[in-house]
Image (cartoon, rainbow, N blue to C red):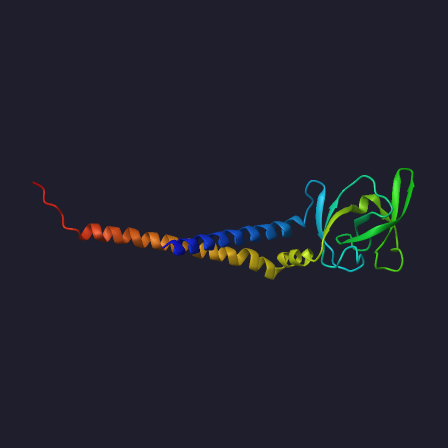
Length: 187
């Protein structure tokens, strides 16, 4: 009996751990879509910053008012405004309170074409987690959503339906016993 209780407890703990992990990955996938408290989580999709930042890494950027040569920044892509790039500042030119930056990927031979205006900078990289971006990208894909949201939801609904079915059976069984029990005569 004791071993059976231990198995049940371990299964419950693993079940709750699974739900916590699903929630964490769902939050990571969601949080990579918007900024929270001046921090932004982004996935690096190219190797232009290797070896400093590997392809498939997650970078956490923080928005600052001032950026300097050598800082690794994420900025809105000049040709595709919905996309971002993460490169190192190679040159900084300021005039009249407006700063323009030339950037360069560590793995690239030359500086990027064009200059990045300060208002196009998403933030400075403060943390890089290698390869974790692959997982976040998967979580944001249709198979990831199915695996992390739909399947756990179906499991939860199924388990709850089983519990409800069991309770309904018990209630019917009790009612049947009550209706079949001999009635006491009144004196």
